[in-house]
Amino acid sequence: MKNKTVKALAILLAATTVSMMGGVSAMAADDTATEADAAEETTDDAEAEDDAEAEDGEASDDQAAADNVAALIDKIYVQERTDTTDEDCKAAKEAWDALTDAQKELVEGEEASPEYFGADTGDASNDDPRNQDEIGENELLVVSFGTSFNDSRAEDIKGIEDALQEAYPDWSVRRAFTAQIIINHVEARDDEYIDNMDQALERAVDNGVKNLVVQPTHLMHGAEYDEMVGVIDNYKDKFESVAIAEPMLGEVGDDATVINDDKKAVAQAITDEACKEAGYDDMKAAADDGTAFVFMGHGTSHTANVTYDQMQTQMEDLGFTNAFIGTVEGKPEDTECQAVIEKIKDAGFKKVVLRPLMVVAGDHANNDMAGDDEDSWKSQFEAAGAFDSVDCQIAGLGRIEAVEDLYVAHTKDAIDSLGAEDGAEVSDSEDTEEAADAETTDETAEDTEAAE
Image (tube, rainbow, N blue to C red; front, side):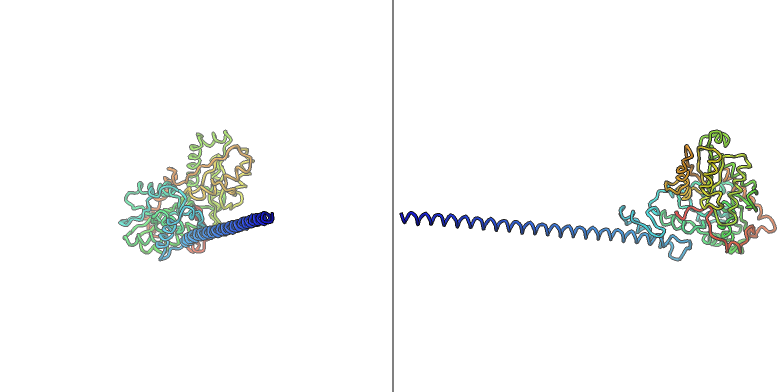
């Protein structure tokens, strides 16, 4: 009996020991699992942190690359040409081309944006910079503010130049832009080299030009015209004869009542084109259908700004009750957008067509007039809630045949003046001292793009 009891106790003790050992093993296994889980979580956290740091690093690198391009764009977004301009333009484009699509979207500077290189403004190869040598003795230099919008440059500015070359085959037509900002933009983006005023005149001198006729494509005798005259005055002794033709709208006049044949021709030409594109036979037919046309000019702080009021007078003189002249700059106040809206509302017209009163359909036409931003003219007219429709015609004056004919006539007058006794004198229609003091404006500006 005693042996059986001892044996039973031994068996019980063994079983208890085994049970306790199993529990310890289980506890050890649990501890091991917990430690493994913790280690895995630590590893995951470390990897996530590494990934975040990597992403931050990549984002930082992307922004740095974009900022570099922005700085290079801002460097060439200037109105003065320097000894390094050509190199700077090339460097900006190469840096842009090296960016990824995502990096390009990050480009932002004082003047820089993805639009500088990325905007599609047409095919630059359709243009002709007209910077060739072998000019001959007679040069017809066509001076424009310029535009970085390729299609408009080809259709509007080149259209005028082509018309002049066809009309005067014995004269070599060459080009100059007064906006270095635009010249740099076109050079950097499209590898097209356009002369500024000094480059064009130096080219003429180097080519032995004797007779120089300058035809500005400017709208009026404004600050841009004055500055052009000032530059030409520095070169007048290098040619046997120099003549400067009238800008599009001719002499300015003293007040809003002064109109002339040039203003009449342009008023008729632009309204004819606007009606044709809108599907009307004439302005009366459009008026009968409740349609008003708004012709948006740039505006200027120069005294020549009265030209816009004169164009309004001219429209009224022609009986065009549904033609309204406006300006981007809004000077005088009766030509700013809201004032024009009120005029059209008071007149009772329910349909509106917006069209630029500018030589080229560039930045102002595409953005200030027809853009989607809330401050564009189209958006402001739509927000007025007073019109059944607001349409835009994006076309510059330079592509209208009647306007081209007007430039041809002005050039003829300048060429004919060379036969006069004082034909070699630079036009004194604008005092060159005033030109030096004139406030810079861009009555035909495309932006300083702005332009661009």
